[in-house]
View 1 (cartoon, one colour):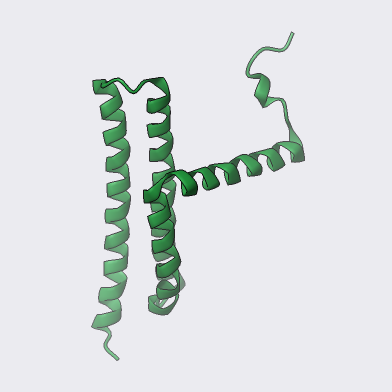
View 2 (cartoon, rainbow, N blue to C red):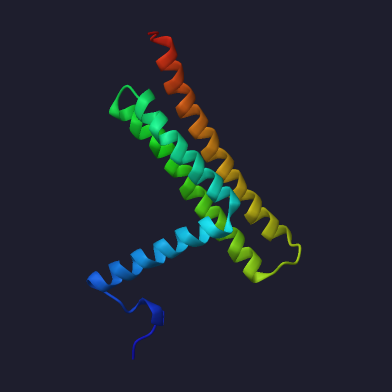
Length: 130
């Protein structure tokens, strides 16, 4: 007799295809339902071309684009935490507040890291002169 999650029965290529579909569903849901995620996507779309122009090395480019991707990743996780907490209850609860606040703090730290990376590259770009 098989025990465990009945939704975990796929293997091989089928599992990869379904996992990809679920990931796309998650991205679509975040884009449709989370204004912060939409804003960060738009910011990323605007900043990636700037990164291509500003970065003097491949490492700088990876750091700049990677920091933008990290913001999106953390925002997705924060949104998942918020959805889970809201699914459990809309009642005010200190643990629910703590979970949501920590998710928000994680986004703030990711944004801070992005600002530091971008500021460093811009500073290097300006310091080098024309």
